[in-house]
Image (tube, rainbow, N blue to C red):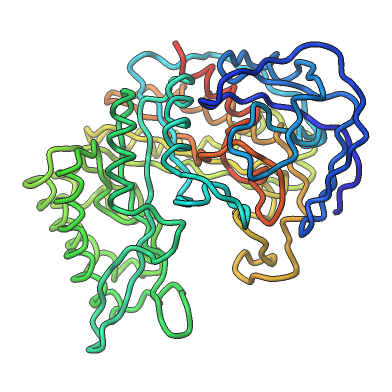
Length: 461
């Protein structure tokens, strides 16, 4: 689907830039901007809206009339006071009513920060420039204003092979992965603002002469991976203790390890994780965590050194007919199975951390579990090139908003004995939603979308 000329929705964002605020009549503007590689063409004419992010009041802030001078058409501009996107991005449904907010004061509020760390180009748009540390600092201040108490940081790590065939782990050699130096900066910056940091693992591929790919979950590969993982985690434990990270994952949630058989998992992987957890409990003063699933939470030698158990609430699947009549209640009805899981995890006597994320388009609920937003891909999300399925997807922010409200109402209904933590993801560090050769409007980040306003309603007491 190619987009022609249409109305714009305006979101005013301050993000440390200062100024802003909507109001006044709309002045027609005839300028049209074509973003080159993108098939999207914007018209800056007729009705637009403005959101002052220092004074978000959901949902009314998302329907404030904007003046044409607020419109930004430069995806590289990091000092914008407005973010512009087509009015059609709001989607097919009314924004949902928020019910039951805010969370009890004892519920811990958090977001996962998107794993893109463009050191000299904080946006995903090719050719743009900037300083990621500056954008991170502005984002931390903004997150503080919407009630965030914790963030998750997720560096990229890859498997490499030595000449003797053994494996080791190393930071991914690309601009998009956070370095140890930048991780320390991020931790200190967040903590200075009163926000705690949870470190999460991400090891998805092995680097070979043929490129990057997930290894097979064979016993041979697992037995090569485990000593590499233990050595890597010993190094991480030392680093995270030194820089004062507040919590760390012991396991590897965003990893190739999902390809292991249950037998291999139980025989090799769980004992290895138990060793790592014991090391952390001795040499690390922060909290330790694992993800529920594959019997990890039932392995006694591992569990005894774990403080937090993470539960990922996945987006349920809908038929296309069900999506056409989507409501908060119909979405929540598909989340019923999670109640028993969360209650079982709570019975283990550990802090329960509940996570969710939602991409803002309708096919995400039907047949597209994940859509890459940082670049053009084919329908598989792996092949790069000319197909660019992203340009065929219509954003629908109302779908994301409905899902956010459903998830948050559902999580609020959990009556737990132990501490409850809530994490939404994944939060972008820059403001622009303009599609170029990347597509932040399709990303799961709530930033500058109504979902952010809903999050604030639930997070701010």
